Length: 493
Image (cartoon, rainbow, N blue to C red; front, side, top):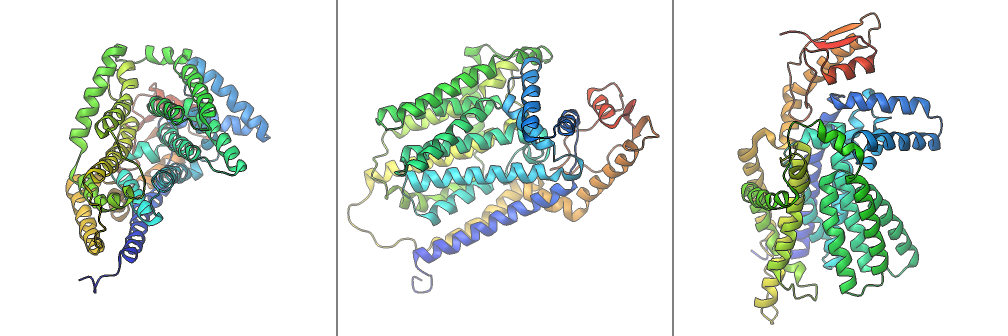
């Protein structure tokens, strides 16, 4: 068999090429279906603001000044997530009706690239892994995250959810990658300067983002700062300054007057601070138990030989694995606290997406550490023969099995499967055509009271919500303002 199969390095290159193909077939249908998407619900409210700012701004400086003014008002009147809102308005300006698909291109691409960058930095720079093993692991994790995103419409297709939640998550991933690179401390001064600038910029962006990424990154930033001081790292003072900057942004965010305004309109009440923390631990433990599905377990088994090779390359004892797992679990659980504290629930779909993405990072990160701990204690000192000769056939069989498991377990709730299904059956095309029929009415200046037909097609990736038959419903009023109508409503069924 060894004579038939290529050597280990060749097998890794073939698997790497296969994972690139896997990534492409995962993403391409998601980009294609985005061309049948359009604004809905909250998008219309923000589009009114964005179009006004873009119409009144005749220079880059004036544009940013207008966005800053808008963010100040938003901080006072609705919520403290000012950088997320500023980014939303900035993206919505050029991504309105005719280019709405660009929001998916931006958010999905940033999500994939930021995570790929983080995983490669950790594995190659921190663990001294080779490129091919690092890339294979990184791409497989990203594919699983994308395929099993629980609410993909709110992650990549509904621009308000995508920019306000997915983008801050991607920014947090970039910040983590930059802190790792800073820990590796490049010798060239200009590289360190670029890292300093990047860390400050991402610190500012994440600290003004949504609270799920905000609280998780706060824990990671604190632990990173403590580790820099423990290792007596040359950049420890700078990282401490960055953490202080993050704390300032954190308090500006959570203490915004608009937060109380928004909470006063909520129909639910949250837990006390202590109860929310305890509830977070319980919810996180239940989440891990429920969502440790066969697909992610099979992928964990595929990673074992790759992790075993990686941990041997770093002269590190991997001490106290139980403590590392406990700390990482607490960081994962901390993400549940904001919504439990404020609303008494674990959060809407866009929040659930972040839980799922970080769960896979938590899962495979812990697997890597435990593999290192086990091998450091039980590995033989003698050099063993090449045991990777069955790596290629093993991966081929398991990846085929993984797709069958995904289809049987999740069906058309797997993002790529759903995109292919709705494109093939014409659901996405019908949805877009019905929207265009609505637009003929909304853009007709002779119609002052618009009555729209309900959709008959509801693509899983594209449909988020719709207006109602009540013209006084908040979304209906937003449509009326944006399109210059007296009223907008759905036709009675």
